[in-house]
Image: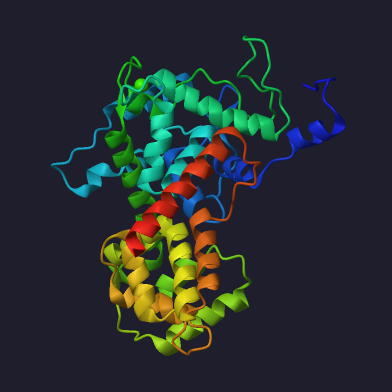
Length: 380
Ligand SMILES: [Ca+2]
C-alpha cells in the first residue's frame, strides 16, 4: 500500500532491502499468513553458506504444521545428563520450527558479542529489574529491534494503536504476527508464563554458537575428526572480501610454513573462534603492543590471544594463523590485515549499516567503556 504522505526519498528507502534483509528472505523457506520465517535449519545455513539449499518455492505452513512446530518447541528440553547431542536444539528441530526476521537479527547480534555485552542488553530488557525477562519484556525487545528497522526504512512509528506494529510490506519481513515463534514457545512455555533468566538465555546462545561452529567445522572435515592447517585458514578467510587470488596467498604461506601433519580438532577450532567475539579487545591490545614494540611477534600474538579469551588456544592453531598473516615472512604479523579478515568472518558477509541512535548508540557507548576498562586491567 502506498502512503501518500511519504516523500519520494522515503518511498525509495522503504522499498530497498538491506543485505541482511535480502539474506533473510533468500534463506527463509517457510511462510504463514503472509509472514516469512526461517526454519532452524535455514538459520544455521544462513550463518555458514553463501547460497540456500535448492528449493522450488517457499513452503506455506498449514495450521497442523504450525501446531507440530509448537509441540516440538515445547517438547525440546536440554538434558544435561545426556551427551552434548541433547543441547543441539536447531540441529534437532531442523525444519520443524520458525524464526522471525527480528529474531534472526538479535540472535545474530547475541552470537557475535561477548558475555558481558549480552548481560547488559539482557538487563536492558528486564524492565522491572526482577532478573527475569518475561514474554512481554521479550516482545518489547523485538519491538525495539523492529523500530530500528522501521526508522531505517522511513516507516513512521507514530501510527494508531491498531496498526502500530503492522507494516504493509510485500516481502513479509515485518508484519505483526500473532503466531508464537519457536523461541517464544521455548523460552516462555505454552501459556507464555515462564520466565527467562540470563543464565538460561546465555546457555541457549552458547549452545547455538557451538551448533553453528560444528556445522562449519564438519563441512571442512568431510567425515573426519580433524581438519588440516590449510582447511583451518580456508575457514577463517572464507568471508573475506578480498578476491580469490589474495586468499590463495594465505593458503600458500600456510603450505610453505606450517607442517601438514598438524591436525586441528573441533575443540581447537572452537577455542580459536571463541576469540572472534573478543576481536575488538584483540585489536586494541595489538595496536598498543605495536606502538610499544614496533612489531607483532608470534610470542606476543599468542599472549594477546590468551588475554582476550582467558583460556588456552592450541599453539599449533595460533602458529598457523600467525604464518598465514606474516606477509613478509619475517616473523612480524600484519595484524591489520588479520583483523580485517577476521572481522569479515565474524560479521559473516553482512554488516549493520544503521545510524547509531538511541539504543544502538547507548550499546556502543557501553561496549567501548567495558572494553577499555577490561583491556586496561588485563594489560596493567
Ligand atoms: Ca523482568
